[in-house]
Each structure stands twice: as structure tokens, then as C-alpha cells.
Length: 278
Length: 216
Image (tube, rainbow over all chains, first blue to last red; front, top):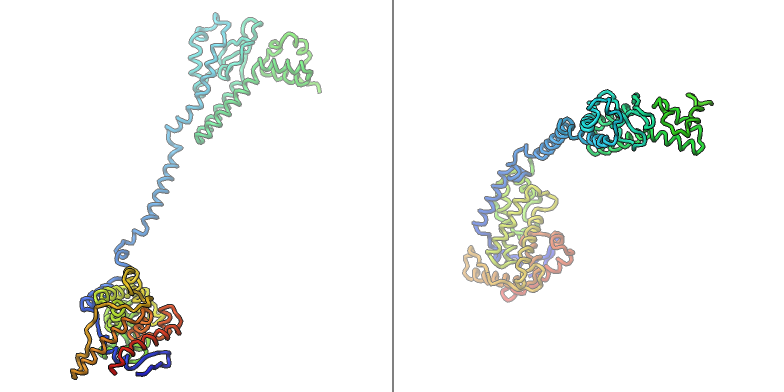
């Protein structure tokens, strides 16, 4: 026996190798061979690089997720496109616009008709309910009506002013005058309401509230009583120029403006001409 | 076509060569790889030839480690099933034999891990405890009855001696003598330096030689 090492680094012993060849001759069982060869043969029946389960899948199943996503997106687009055109939704958006006008008319009972006798009966008891219905719909606004407002009463809501006629308690019978400003304000409010009706509900609500508040403040500022108080305050503060400007504007809106002024300002009002002396 | 067809068309009538017979590779250089590529391309006959060449060495490699025919059969089947499943991923970057015994070795490691309670049942176990499942030995073709007895006795001693060889040395010996792997290939497969493999082989040969000394 001799130890041997080949040129490629092999180590061996001829006697041991020969004895090993004779001793180690086992083979796997024929059953194992059959199983392995059957599996190998079955493996060649399948397409290379594609397991059987995946190969049985139809080609279009790969596009299923994409098709589902496209369908959902299309459906969502259609829903979004349909939302603004729904009539029920527009009605729902208009309703809040009309509602705030109604309470303004409810203040109407405070307006006392001084000439109930010579005015028709509709100007008395049924008037609040009727006007409430009129104020509820802006498009349904009728030509300016006549009415009487007693000076000294607190200013009423814009809708009530449409019907109010400037007059003073110490003037006796009520005077019929034109009322251009409140009508413009209501027109603007109506336009604004029509605009916001096409907007989102949240935006509509906020803009509606802001618009109503602005209209109220504008109307309140144009109230004869408020005008008189403002002119009086400016006059008493010594800001005569501003007081004169206010008086001229007051006259433009109310031809009987001088009569509405307190008696202490009548003398001063006579000195105020139609145009400022500049 | 050339190498694959050549390998696929080659008959397997030549007597099976053992690694120790030729001193180096079991087959011609690249023939196994060509057969495996032919099988991956769908030629089942190539696999049959490949299997016929390597089934004995791989089975014996597993049997010598497990010393149990049933377990060896099971592991052998698993290893070749892995070959079948991995045919599409096979790339002839190394010798087919190296790849095949890498699979076999991994399967053995898995087996020993699952049987962690078995004493000495590990490739890395230095204790050389064997199993009582002794294979049949003897040269059936030897006409001389005395020679047959001597061969059988020699075989028994060798196998008994190998069972007492520690796992790493036994693994190196089996990879060398059954699989026909070189020192470098065994070193790569076992993850140790070539010098370590050489020393393990020397130790294994020494133990086996000692077992046969009084029969010489």
C-alpha cells in the first residue's frame, strides 16, 4: 500500500481504492429510480420557465386589476359629473338662501301702519304673512309697495324696508317715496344667491352668510334713522364737511331728508347746498 | 447543437467508471453539463443518461453518511427531484458533479439538522459512530471462493472503518472517491481550505489502510 498524490492534488491509496471499489457497490432501489425518472419525464412535458399552475392561467387575467381600476375610475368620474346636475341637489342648495330672508319679514309687525284707514285692508292684518311669502322668493318680488314707517322705531330687516316708506312721526300723514336702494341690494343678493347656488354646499353656506350680513349692514347704513344719527354725530363732532357730504347723500336717497333731521340741524341744513363749495 | 447533441446521442453502453478508476473526473469534460442543458431544453433521454451515470455515486455518498438504506433512498430521491426542479435555473458555471453534490450535501445537512438527536449523525461531527445497517458485500463475479471471502471481509472492514472515521474526514473521502471531486472542489463545497481537505483525506486513508493491514 502506498500513499499517492496526483498532479492535480489528489490523494489516494491504490489498495484502499481497489478494495473500496469492490466493497461499495450499492445502487438505489428500482422504485426510487422509477420515481425519479418519471418526475424527470413529467418535467419535460411542461413549458420551460413556466410552472404548470401559471401556464393554465388565461392571458386576460393579467389585465384584470388594471381593468378593475379603470372601471372604478370611470364610475367615479361619471358620478362626479352627474352630481351638479341633479335637480334635487339644486333645490337643496337654494333652500338655505331663501330661509334667512323670512325672519327679516317677521319683524314686520313692528312696523305700524299709520294710515290704516285709507289704505286697503291688505295692509293691516294679512300683511305680515303675505309679505313673508313674498320675501321668501326673490324672483317673486312685486313692484314696490307703499307703507308707512314711524321714525324712531328700530330699523327692520332689508325685506321690510322694501315696503317701508320714509316718514316721520311728526310729519303727520305718511309720504310716498321711491325706494331705489333697498331694491338694488336685494337684486345683488339675489344674483349672489344664484351664483353660490352653483358652488359647493360649504362655500355656498359661507358666502351666503357673508352676503346676507353685508346686505344687512348696507341696508342698515342706509336707514333714514341711521343716516340722521350719523349726520348728527358728524355735525356735533365738528366735522361739518363730512356732515354736509352725508346730508347731500341723504337728500339723494330721501328727498325729504331735511324734514327728517332734528330741529337743531334744520338751520344748518339750510346752509348746505346741493353741491359742496370747494 | 454540437455538444448537446453529441452528449445526448452518445450511448451509455460503456462500463460505469468510478472516480477512483480514472483518477479524476468521472466523465469527459463538459459532457454532464451538456446533458443537463439538453434536459433543461426538454430532452428527457439526456436526463436518463445523466442519472445512470451518477445515481450510484450519489446514492452511496448518502448511504455512507446515513448508514441506512431507507433514509438513503429518501434523500437520494429528494436530491434528484431538486435536480429536476432546478433544471431551468441550471447554468454550467461549474462542473455538474460539483453542483450535484452541493445539492446532496445540503440535503444531508438538512437531514442531520432534523435528526439532531441522533448521535454522530452530522457531517461536522468528529465522532465516527456508525449505524448497524450494514450492506451486503462480496465480489459475486469472483470465481475463487477464497478470494470472495477475502473481498467480503475486506469490504466489511473498510465500511466499518469508514463508519468510525469522523464526519468531516468521511465526507472528504466520499466526495473524493465516490464523486471524483478534486481537492479544490471539495474545499469549495465544504467551505474549508484545500490544505484542510488534504489533511482530512490523509487521515481517512490512514484509518482505512489500517483496517486492511492484516489482510494484505
